[in-house]
Length: 381
Image (cartoon, rainbow, N blue to C red; front, top):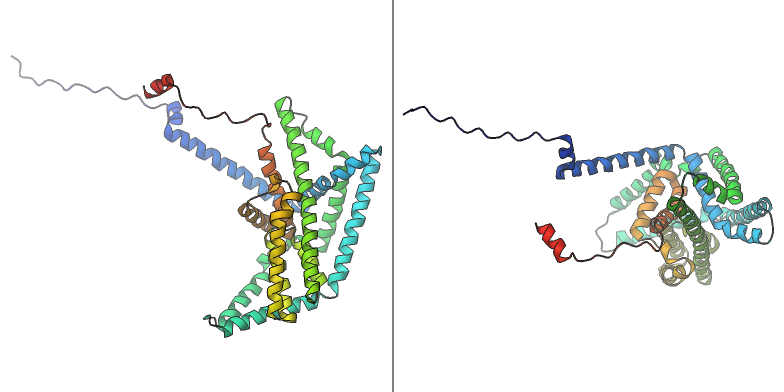
């Protein structure tokens, strides 16, 4: 009988994982998805950086696109009356320049002679509020108020603020160049806008071509509706607040109404700043009671706009959540200054409208259905 020990049974070797198995398991899918997200973010960052570097060209093109969408009904009406494309374009362009130039001239003459008085009244109103806070029951000292004011003035006069919020209007040469470029691009958008978009759609056929046409019409309709609706709302806000200031005999009512009109093109922030400025002027010139009445007028006009006027003038599809508006305003101000803040919200509205119009109305997500007993058995097995 042999006493030699029995050799242990050898365990079979596990097969080495292949590249396909590493990429298709749970961790591999997460890694691939993460790499796709990082690559997308990198591409978006490169595009944004490139657009910022070329903002002297990008911003005039975007402004021309927005104005062309707003003026598209005029072009369509003239061409339906039998005018040629070139004649309708020249009439619309020259008429728009005359109207816009006249409005800007009136605004400049209305504000130019009273701007120093307006700014001094605002500063004096801030001093009144600071005195009230210091003499009240709140534990606020003069040193804290001076520190807050110095910090605000330091930010406004810093190079960061100058290159961020005021970069678009810092040099007269850039403004003139951008304005001329915007006019030239606007002319071609008005004349050949449909042909330009059709040129970009040449590589597409079938459903892709239909989608491209649907996106183009949606973008033009959304941009035009947003600009025209915002202009109407801005005029109503300026008229309502300006009439209220005139009735209360608040000085500088006309310049304040002009500021309200301009500020209405920057949602949320513009109306708030204009209302604060009007209340400060009323506080200095007419006392705290009239200032409170001005605040009540501003709030009432904003509520009337948000609850009644805006749903009628602008379609519901253009309504964006306030958080989306704030994020768009912040991004637009950082990337394009004041002009970026003005055009960021319509761009966000167009992006949201394009996402909703990506699929045709007849294509809807399939309804959720409970699995059949056979499917449950197969899944369990």
